[in-house]
Amino acid sequence: MIHGGFLSDAERRELRALARDGLSEGRVVRRANAIVLLDAGWTCEAVAAALLIDDDTVRCWHKLYAEHGLTGLVVFHHLGRRSHLTRAQEAALFAWVRTTLPRNTRTIGAWIAETYDVAYSHAGLIALLHRLDLAYRKPDLVARKLDPARQKAFIEDYDRLMRRLGEDEAVVFVDAVHPTHQVRAAGCWAPKDERVAIEPNSGRERLNIHGAVDLETGKTQMLDVPVVDARSTILLLMAILAAHPTMRMIHVFLDNARYHHARLVRQWLEQEGRRITLHFLPTYCPHLNPIERLWGVMHQNVTHNRCYARFRDFKVKTMTFLTQNVPRNWNTLRDSVTDNFRVIDPAEFRVLR
Figure 1 (cartoon, one colour):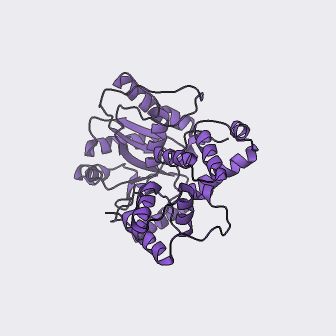
Figure 2 (cartoon, one colour; figure 1 turned 30 degrees about the horizontal axis):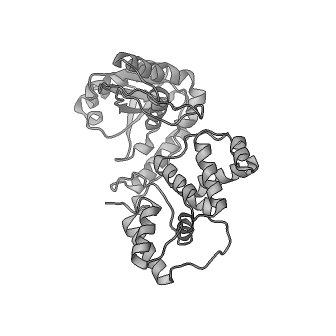
Figure 3 (tube, one colour; figure 1 turned 90 degrees about the vertical axis):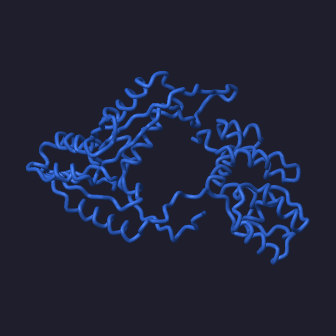
């Protein structure tokens, strides 16, 4: 089943412009219309009936768009007509796009018209960009200080630890999160003839949660603290110890926040009976901490399209989800909170400035 609301505002505007472009081919317009209707919540069968086609064709068009974006809707895998631009002009266009990274095809079309006095339809312009190996894409957030070697070494050490992990050892991941008492609007299913809205919150209060999760069991320790610091770190480590009374050793993975390295924390760990070993993630590597993914799941279940009139209600809902719902529904949630790590190399990206 294809769920509505999968388009961003920019993608929706592009598709509507393509559908309304009087110079575009009819088959391109129908494809654009189909994607817009699917995004609005129509079923494949309803779209097929409206466009006088079969529903498998609609699913095929959706797949083309999901895999190739607008390019998949306008390119039909044949040679087509000769380009209106010379090879030199195409090379100049490629260089200009690579340098300026325009946000939409309208800007590109305007540049071509102004520079070479050549007018392209929306569909023709997308076909041209496809042929020049240009695609519409969203930049990834990548810190320039990421060290691929350290990431690789961390992943290898983690895999080695997990292979040798004894039955009397546990692994938990620790992090802090600060959710704000604010609703987050997100796409959803709704009757197509009914406009939906959600009332924003007026407050700006936020929670300070210092938490831990065990990926094997889904067991969590979540502390609502006035401030995240060395003392809250010690309280969290004490909660982790209490939650694993039979474990000889507990391996705690956490980031390099200053309070995690504090002298107070080190002194506490040096005391007798501490069954905890700290493992620090490489710097600038939140993607190597699965609990970061748990925070995303929390927002999907707590703040997306949900309004809480009082901060107290928001706090109770958040903490209940993290402390009770996560362990109880871990079999369902565990696929979204995994230790399937990967190395991110800034050298593989063109970092924008």
